[in-house]
Image 1 (cartoon, one colour):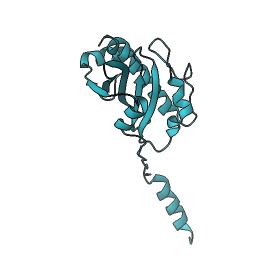
Image 2 (image 1 turned 45 degrees about the vertical axis):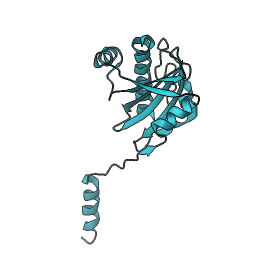
Image 3 (image 1 turned 90 degrees about the vertical axis):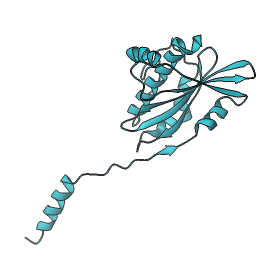
Image 4 (image 1 turned 90 degrees about the horizontal axis):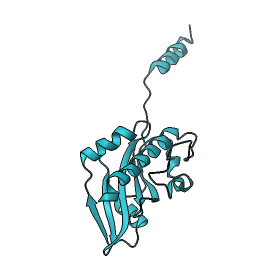
Length: 178
């Protein structure tokens, strides 16, 4: 009977709700990501993507979590490409990332701007992000097909990869004609 407190304590610990600790890390702001992707740019012109275009892409590649922010990038009159900020859900929290495209729609850079999950942030490592360089809408851009997974970051890898695929379709269907 002297140790009944141990049993009670163990039971209380087993059924007590556990707190999930969230870690929000902002690696780069939008302006910093724009300067890194296009150091020679003189103008970032906002471009609005219609709800109809987003719905069309969602039918083929899944829905957008939010509304992607899009900028046409110029140096004087010369088009340098497109800069897009988007968000996906990692496991339960949003991941904010940016994609820089050249004028032909090929990815030149992918950056993770903010990561809010408690683990799985290995997607911010340059080696993983570099897999996207040169990808176009005609490429599969699928996890475990042409994009490697990172153990322990599977959901983050999968959802960012799916998000990038949507952005490439956005270029192909909308921005290439703008």
